[in-house]
Amino acid sequence: MEPRYSEWKALIDAYNRKKMIYCPYCDKPNAYMMQRYVTNRDGETERQYRVECPVCNSVGKVYMHTSTAELSWNAREQDKPLDPEPQKKMTYHFVKDADG
Image: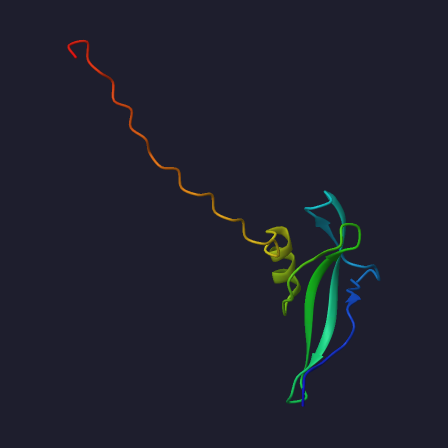
């Protein structure tokens, strides 16, 4: 039996509002904390969380806790790693003396 996933829905806080988070890509607080339910092979149901920004279409990684998903989003862990710059070769310039 394969795990079953529900649809991603916005997380509702205690004030009956969608939980919004600052988006480092748009520089505005318009990203939503999303949640879904996963039923695993044993029949246990767990929650999964991720952050999505509807403006710039950025999506964060999936985590089991809201705080971890938010910290990952703020640290931009979903970004692709940068290619390392090639190491520059050291060059030596010899200066001739006046004696020759």
